[in-house]
Length: 196
Image 1 (cartoon, rainbow, N blue to C red):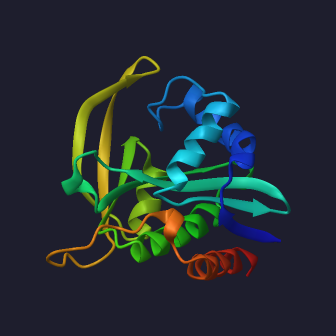
Image 2 (image 1 turned 90 degrees about the horizontal axis):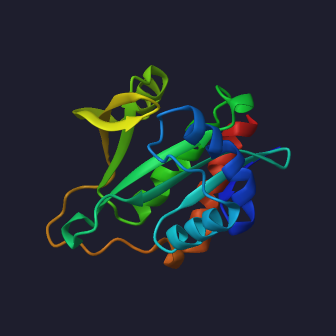
């Protein structure tokens, strides 16, 4: 049985076990030090006030997670967010990332965000193909913007428009304030996709 649900601080150890190898062995994240479980719990709790953090459970095992985060601090950027997803190696190519992103995108639309950005450390053909298949469009590359594991890295930017660019937009809703039934319906639909 597969379930997509909102992450909690209790999931931190399982999520960190998925994320830590990406930190230690790849440049897919520019984070260089593995946080401890307590730090990761705090990160989850802090982000969940404003943005969705979702996990995928298959047979009671967390197999992946996805989340949104602030794009930049200045108030004029408040309608733009970034996203990331991490999936355990044993559950790659089973639709986990697609189910997580599908739910994440629908929730962000409800919150009234306008732009969703995927920041991909290059080369990463699989991530590029996945994001483009999800509707993201490439628009820029920052060349040699980061240094990790002995190499200067390029970072590509992809964008997905979530809502129309209306005049006088209201501030996006905080995730904490979202209607729970609406979120539950979105999560249920994403979980059903995995169980088909």
